[in-house]
Length: 463
Image 1 (tube, rainbow, N blue to C red):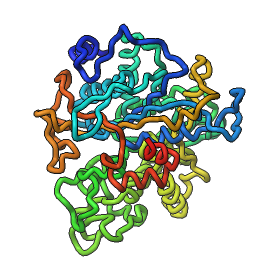
Image 2: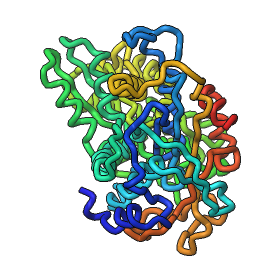
Image 3: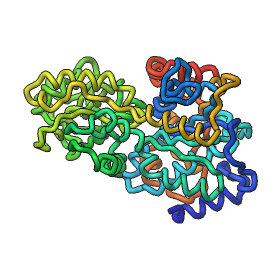
Image 4: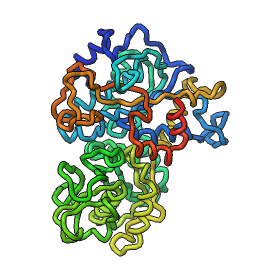
């Protein structure tokens, strides 16, 4: 499985000068005192981290009973957001699956070794990052395409570290929300790459095969949604009042993600300001329409999802939506608002359950992590408040690598360079992995974290 990455694996295990170098002779077994590693393709995975940090599913004698105390209060975490290389789903769409795998392997190696860069303005390296005892892959796309590769790499290195992904957790959460005997439609709302992997589909089918009731499954790839949350300029440009060049989101001409004019009353787009862009006097008469807000991306995809439920023709109502991307919990309230609106229409009223359970896989991931640590005597239940010592890192383009091509602001890779030019086994450091700070994320992103993830915001700003 790792064969295509042979040169890269050899460099990180034999060349001590490699930033991702891991000395197999120095690897020790997981211990209580070590940290827990978490990584995602961007800051979206902070929703998973926040769910873990706030988890209260077990009491002090490890029974499945909340007790008012955070389950991981005494654990230290290391979080990596590979922001420079996101979104991961585009690598699959661009035919660069193995390059995606290499990014995922680098994420896992970074959390395994002790190195990080001090700042985006210097390639200087520090060597005081703690070791880890467990790894959580918070990213759905990374879980679908890279979890088995990471497990093989960790086994090859002899780490003994458990690798936990979010997909199994999300499927179990959805099936637990629906009674055994009822027929239900379960929707998978994920990135296009995660949808195309069919990882959720296969897992749901496997877990539901012995149920009495029928589980009908629909999938919706949320093209542009997590990119809009991350302010990717190809998908959202709040400075524009008219359609802009280079837009890559859903449109009137996109065969897979087509904005249907007949569905405009159901999309119910917010047309205030620059939230949606069109080229004529009204959206109805325009031949170019561009989504330009997180809420409007969400509206497009939830209506598109409901169209798939309607066109299946089995009349099994939607009972659960699995948020198969770590960014999507940021828009849970918008999803619920849209479902209420659609439930009041003749077109969809009989197809939307009341309630519809919004499943965040992060919650079941927290349970799985706790059980693993407890069952292997790796869980800290007393001592110092180690949660406050958690560290957060983010990738930025390495401006000191001559081959790196960035946009004029230097803050992001040029699109063609990121997805089309780079290859595997090039043994170049495209990125610097630096502490996450106000310097390296936008005010909008930091504000979103502060609003939705207050504990995580507190931990980030005090590190």
